[in-house]
Image (tube, rainbow, N blue to C red; front, side):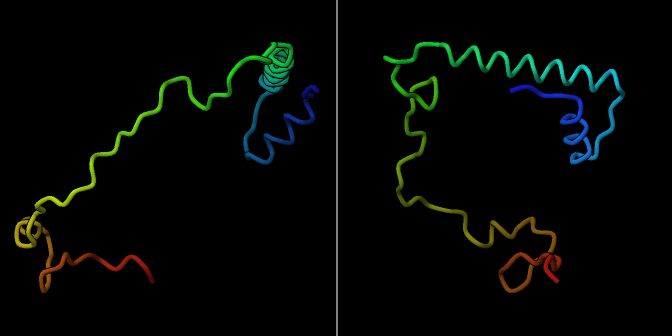
Length: 95
């Protein structure tokens, strides 16, 4: 598999980007270098390698789920720029 200038032109058109001829040639070269490297990776023997999603140990970062005292309504509304009947009043965002 390789990339040619026609494919770079097509992707640039879809992305609504414009490149000079030199830049397009550089993209062709870079994409083909990347594809060549990916092909080299296929040659790596992974027969006895355990499948891993990440390269670090996963651990639970969530805190214990327990009821704690929360801020009361009056304190929460204390610095509200606009409030009404115990609620924040905000501009309408949905038509």
